[in-house]
Length: 436
Ligand SMILES: [Zn+2]
Image 1 (cartoon, rainbow, N blue to C red):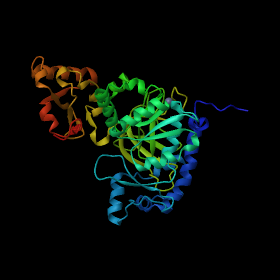
Image 2 (tube, helix red, strand yellow):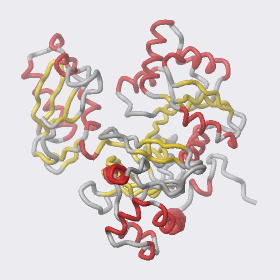
Image 3 (cartoon, rainbow, N blue to C red):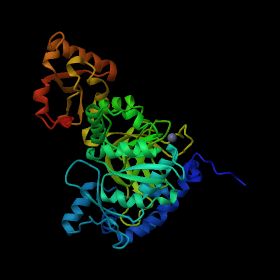
Image 4 (tube, rainbow, N blue to C red):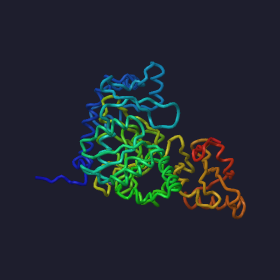
């Protein structure tokens, strides 16, 4: 008799060999292909245009070589041409379709995505919470963003976790603190920037000891948007053990593990391709590439070779936590990438150091991107005129020297006062990339 490895909720899947994982993906793909071709009007139209039929797909390799990509523009275009609110994606109607979500992207109008009854998000979430340390009988604080999450919270009770739901709203912070102190929950799912800022304010106003109130949490899942240096510092000060979460191309979520070296992409629920943003060949393992997803467990409206427009760093090397599924680090939007002398530059590369000078502490900056490729990195940087140490020109030289040492790139810096800079958008939300 073998003893189940208690470190994993589903050890057979989570630690499966790469060969077995690919066999599992292949069997799911081969079921999915005829299913989706017969039912999804968008897939049928797209494949017909490319002369592909299910008979052409006999293996995972065939799928990757022959099936055409889809993207958000195609979904919206199909929706508009055919007056189909589901963009040609829906393979079934009610009662299996449980609602409609929207893609997580920030560009253009939201793209509708019909949602399945029991979607892959649940599978990922259960594995992650188990990994954080949740076991049957433990209490979980579950912050609700939307009604849909309320439905989900109700449907993973088979884990034996006891959830306490709190609205993800700064107004509910006193309640969050109260239940954290009374019930001593083991994990918190999930918190994002407005709530952290709310906690900071609450601490200031009331003198509440946030670190003590949250000391029972073995893990706190953070998501919603990239973590700013300020938010990171606050959570470090409160001793939060943070697990970052991101969207897995709208198919599921991906969350960090205890190794904190990338977010696990569950490859039994999604086929992940990591492709050269310019073309369709595989990017180097560990390098930058565009995430392309195929939903393997969605029978309502599966995305098939969906180009997410998200650039990720991605590796399939097994993780020190023992799981064998890939790991990703989100980097930004493909449309934001600037290539300077062949080197990829994204806002995420500038964030870590741009606020290090006394004059630039607010960390406001814009990458100037007139076209994708340039030979010099042009940056607009916000500065505090009252904090000037040795004049504008000297500050420019210090920033240029820092960029040279961090990124090994020549740069051209335009200084703009913080007051002028924030007029380019709401605070901390100015576009990080600008055409001019
Ligand atoms: Zn891991």
